[in-house]
Length: 340
Image (tube, rainbow, N blue to C red; front, top):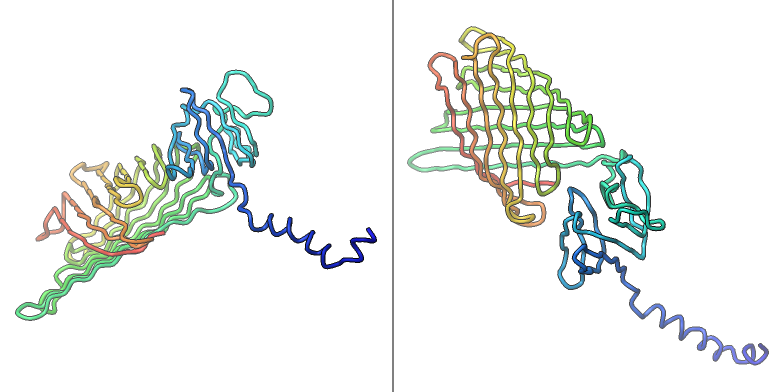
């Protein structure tokens, strides 16, 4: 001790060398191990498990996806946060798919999610949405302008899903409007289980070229969510609506109706090219000739980061339109937007 104190420089050097070695040497990377039923072993970092698939980040193949029913055992050096069927949230370093209990391992069959998003556990809100706009103009021998806008915002909690959406289309030819329509939607879904939910919604529409000053459709229904994820969504709904239409010139009308709806989107190319389709059908309960149908179908391509380009076709059918207006309308839309 006296010798160390007598040579403070040597002492400082002796203590600094191992400290510097610890700082300069790379830290040990996290290594989780997955044993499959066929005997294969996969090492890497487990990112999440949802919809029957576990995602693993590997040093040799990037992010890979493994079917959950192929997993025999998982061991990790850092605890994983898992969400169980009984709605409890626990941490574990070992998961087993065997029939018998194995130490402190959690049974794979009891796990719904690994590293679940906060909204699924009731601890937060998942926000998502998009804003799209398109503009086209021609000047010279003819003067034409076209503008279209659409946007949607969703808020998802463990039990609720809130949706607000709107769109507007304006077309001018030689300075005169030849098309102008505006639509809006407010919708609330309450999930009774993972798949089943109740829904309440109100939609509004204005289109003077269809003689519609304001059409409101309000109703209640039930829905079934087949899939709900970033890569794939599919839901169907059925219920009853009450439809009121205030026409500009034609006599106003109102009637109850049955409603059927479908909402679908899927990435055809991972995080790059998405196909989508939505439609809604209303059939009058007093007169089945009172039939309304609307659909939006298209492709959305991610250009960079959150910027995307969209090409879609909107089709609307009013089986009993106002006098001097057509039953069917087809609109082609091209737009650039931002999504999150």
